[in-house]
Length: 386
Image 1 (cartoon, rainbow, N blue to C red):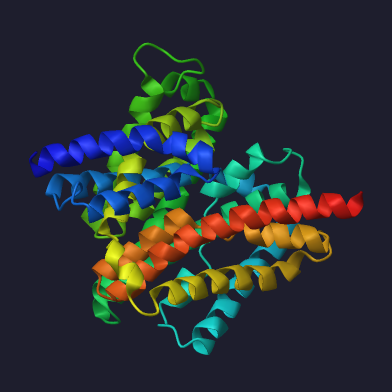
Image 2 (image 1 turned 135 degrees about the vertical axis):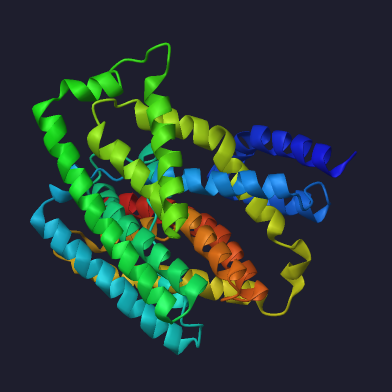
């Protein structure tokens, strides 16, 4: 069987069986896809292939686009002032404690950006286990959206530093990024005014109910690729542009409640799994025997959980001790962003292959350890109450 055929068949099987394996072992589908990608890569069913890598890259950009659809700027700006203030204190403490951890364990400086990453992708899955009125989980989601926005900006700035170094080119790129953000803010403001005066224009662009031409999907894809083109033209981080496209959809077309679900269904049913399987295939299984790799991954996992537990004291007046622990744990699974920024650092030669593998392994450890820990803490709390 040729390499191309082998990759296509293997991808088809992994994409199909991953949800069933996930249901049996009771962990999210994403780590299952990464592990299966690693195993199939080890047995040479997933070899190097330019098209495979290209589609995986598109899958990553689409993942960032879906992350953006979770950020409604109008809802974010309307958050209670106290939550926003405490949220910013929490995020600041995350970066502060991460800096100290990096110095304590003598990590590379770039780890200061890696350790505080927050992604709400797996936080959403917790709503399947807990009631929608669970206080700590709702607060986790609200602060998580703010944290993901900060993480994406950090990812963009880090990408600029990795690509251009600390020189004139970097300052030019950062200046261009600032100008882009200012123009973007003006555009968002103009659209807000436009849709305020002409609300029917929203439903004209994206009908409230699905139509045979799927205008909602077409507009979403147009924005997605348009922002990628703009990022390429400006030589800025493409992932950031994809994220902004998602934010635009979430902010201005919230009337179509099913749209994020439709976009997510397509993404997590096709493109996104290919990215995770590809990521897994880049992890060389034989490196598990490399001296210190598992220990390094566990150290990263412990560090990421620790900084969140320490930073969660920001909400000590709002949450009980048990709720603080659950809040901190829920933010300790930034799998998608951690894998993404690790790949960025590795391909930019900023982190070694050993460190890259340690981060991939840590992302898996986090999901498993945190998922089990959340259930354990929640169950223990109920037993104590009884």
